[in-house]
Length: 128
Image (cartoon, rainbow, N blue to C red; front, side, top):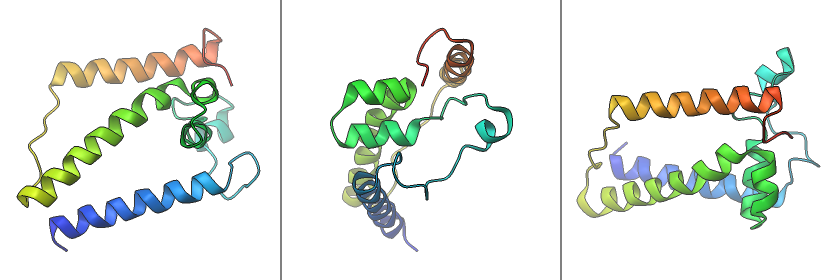
């Protein structure tokens, strides 16, 4: 499979997944996967509530999305812009753009996710 075919397949997958999520609310349909961390420990992982947040974002209800998972609400638009840029670059130039995250940025992002996970479990903010 060529790089352009893989990019097209990812685009179709994301669009179809968004369509399913838009049409079937996670609060009403239970075919969405459960969080294994929450199921075993009853602690909210940094991704808990992410599906519900994405559903609310697809319906342009950003306040509810922020309530379900603030981290996903902030990260989803960044991911969407990055994916669109990467897709355009692959289609236009036939190769993937060079993208390297510096080690200090990686460490800061990891610390942010860790802090968010701890903060929502001790009740500082962003409680479901």
